Image (cartoon, rainbow, N blue to C red):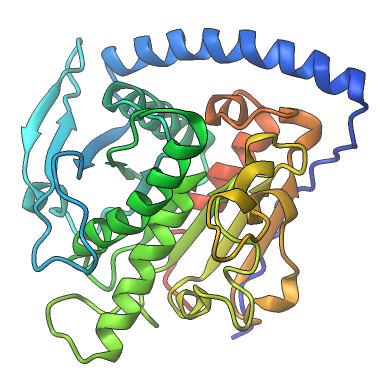
Length: 336
């Protein structure tokens, strides 16, 4: 059977002038503040149409390899009138194996409450988008990314920590049933956490480990959505460090921002590589295997110079792109 073609409607963007960028920056600051308040309220309120959980590695130490077990702190958002967070377990989270999982991985400088609020907002947007029939479970992977120290020192420290927390996420993903559909949505450093986790699973399978479920060629569909990814521009190139992860995904959706001011500093983060960020440069379709669906868009004309996720989630065209990339046809078995 011919591979499914994923072709979301294109978003037309332009290259903003200097004056337009300054106006966009001013608007972005106001919108970000407003969205922060709205998101905090959304996290505290009821969420009757979205099944939302948190898997947190914030209390765990940084590690240099995949741990033997997923020792994550798990919470779930109750569906009551006041929607409070209740303690749960990894086993609880992975129950109902037929339920598709959407794993949201936030970027740098997120406190626990902000990670929850943005994850809840994304879950509600997915539930409202209508791309999937039936329930979807959203898992917020919350890693220790609170602001620490001055800007450059902080982003370098979090770059290292993102690699470590990819191992913790891999310990969770390695317990997901092969038939279960999974979408990973990573923003900024969250993209790095997600790719590190998938690479861990590939490496474990190649080493013959029986401790985790193999991900390459899994029958359940796997979608990857990268929003302003703070990863090196050649990450998925034929000789890139995450090339092997492409054997584990059925769809890649890339949302970049060529005007992103934060991503312009990415070459200073990894001094051994000094590569541009994928989130600022995009990548060619020819890097991907023919059977991997691919959609990409430059959001510069919508988001402007800002890097924050709320600005992406405030745009109806970008929300359609992100939610469709994550869950459209997610429950359809591979090959159908």
